Image 1 (cartoon, helix red, strand yellow):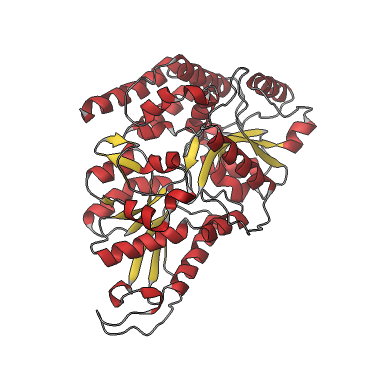
Image 2 (cartoon, one colour):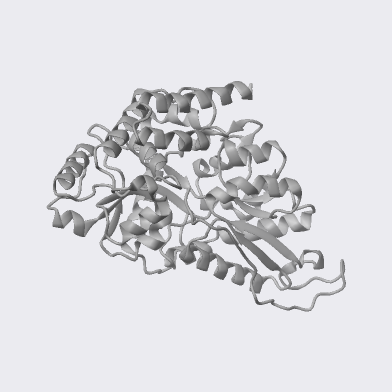
Length: 444
């Protein structure tokens, strides 16, 4: 839930030319039929400069291996994608391959309307289930209104973890040690505030830093052994957001906002701009995701860790999982186009692609090849170790907004009211639960 403000449409300037036999007759190299030698419209959300460079190179490599195929790329922000994707595919002028947000609001809604095609055939053909765990692939499964089961409608290329970024120099200058427990984190924030240092960088005008902060604090207080209640909420099986843990997390974040623990003027700063301020050396901590690794590596003082857990929580959960999934839309009208789309997605989640992402400083969801020797940044090294630990502990959490089609809007509408003190933490959580209960009722 991030990305920059403008969407950009990118068509490669080059065209790889190949002799193509008469339509329906001879085959071109790599086994592609003449019917498949055409444009492939692709939408992605990799709008940061570093991300875009990786995608552009991967597209070039794919075209080089598939003469006659041209990738027609459109890059859109997360919010832009939510607004336009379903409408574009419904109208018949959207992408054949696209990134799509998991959860009821996007992937679930598109599956319900028949706008996405299952990819189980390609999971079996290319062995995607050997590259990523079943619990990760389950985040792209839908059976009617049931989330997490049924057919699979996508697969992701990048892993995502929401954690705690910290500026080691700022902490050292303030005489604050890196916290290892949640109580130590709270004490560190108090000490930083006393020293006149902004404890947290925050921007709530655009993007979703506050949502990630509330969710990350809450899920760090959940042991993986007790994750069933959260899983049921996200997968639409029932339950309630109106819990003591959610209320306490919202209350703490409100206290920070009201008590001067956030960077001054955070209400008028976007999430992306807040990240740039943090990179420039403003603020001691920032809670956000690994998708910012590429930018964060520009400041060697910045490190990344899991949200420190309270005492007694041995396997704390972390918000995250994977980035938006690669999916095939209903605009892939024939089998040849569908197979080309499947082949493109296979390349985007291949070990080769994973190596390219790692070399650029990003955390791939697919394991690196055994002989890969990329020069890993300290941030990426930390991210890979966290990813391994979270998977081993079954502690990968969820984005709260996945739980209903309208939950992201409900949270976005109420977060500014919570931070400004215009509503209580109880009212904030109640708004989430009313949204969820209405969704459950509508499903029946």
